[in-house]
Image 1: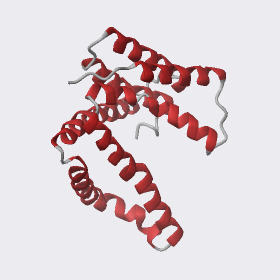
Image 2 (image 1 turned 135 degrees about the vertical axis):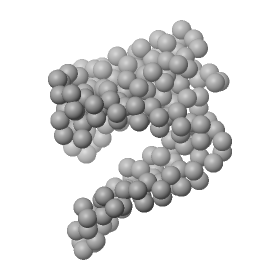
Image 3 (image 1 turned 120 degrees about the vertical axis):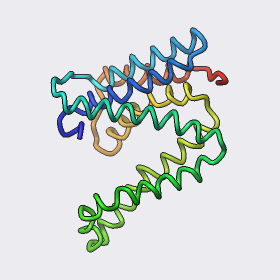
Image 4 (image 1 turned 90 degrees about the horizontal axis):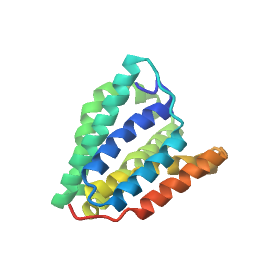
Length: 193
């Protein structure tokens, strides 16, 4: 809903604000504050923020960011209990049942086209199952602040996918942003929470 009304760079920036907050809460050293600042600077270079005066779009973007923070905090707690992947499977089954009545009619054409059905399953596995399992494995081993900082790699991976899949060659500014994100993440030293 936010993307229908706002540029993707602004939606990504608003989503990233929450992860910065989560990372800031867990910072325990000047080195990690510097690492976060460098990663944030690199991310801002990558996402090229352009503000909007669309209050409805901004509402959805900030709601998305707040829900993403909830995902990090709750996901980390669940991962620390040791039931991370099992809990994730249960949560995905519940989400499927909640969304099914809304999305079933939209998905109906895919059932009559095997190619669409295979593509839908592939997208579901690649965009939800694999990343969320990886998140749970990482959350079980990393402090919450470290995991939140690692999320600054998302614009970097999007840029790299843009190069490989879409043949979108990054600008010099993009390359500088990528370098800053990598340096910031490499500088970060996880602390026990």
